[in-house]
Structure formats: structure tokens, C-alpha cells
Length: 155
Image (cartoon, rainbow, N blue to C red):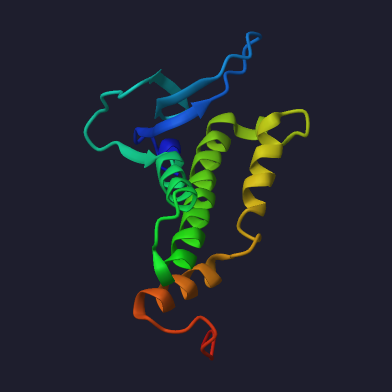
């Protein structure tokens, strides 16, 4: 990940769980990482030119959930929207946990470190249905108007 190479990375609109004794939760904040250091935490952080921005997936998930709750008619695009949101969440979480592991070094590998569990749990998201291949199939077929049962599935 770029944070390891010294390129600034900003994680936008996430939830931060500080590892201090207060156990406070900061919601909807940005985190600016340069090298192996957290340089700033706050809302709408200004960032240096060339910063890699990783958007939090929260607004995407909220929109899909709200549309579902409100009964919005996305017709045959619903499967694509649902698996697309899941895929976005998992891939975003992987990027974020990779940055955290880069910053923590070997400490993130120990069972006593919460990051070890987060890393393992995030990786499991890729195996949970729909996996990457199935997401791409569903998005492709619904976008092109192809029945989801159409064969061959891959190949």
C-alpha cells in the first residue's frame, strides 16, 4: 500500500477506534497517514497533492439500505446493487486493514492485538457469497440484461 512507501493516504469518512484507555469512538472522520505515522484525524482534512484517497463505504451502504427500506424500484438491477455494495465494503475494508497492518508492523500478527482479528475477519469477507467472480458476473449480466441463470457462468 502507498502509505508504506511514504505517499500520503487519507481514509475518508470512517470510524476510528482509538487504542487509548478512554475507548472513545470517532465517527465520520478522516485519517491522514504519511509513511508509518498518523499525521491528522478530523473532519474534511485538507491533504497534500498526490495523496491517495480511500473513501469510506458508509454512504454507499446507507444509500442501498435506504433504497431497500423505502421500496425504491431498481427492478432487475437490485442484485447488482446489493452484491456491488457488499463487494465495495469488503474491498474498502481490505485496503484500510492493509494500511493499518503496514503501520503496525509485526505487532498486528499477534492474537493479543485487535488488528489480528480485524485482518482475519476482513479477509473472510472475500469468501462470503457473493465472492469476487460472482459479483462481476451478476453486475455484468444485469447491466447487459442477461438472465442471471444463463450459462455458461464462467469461461
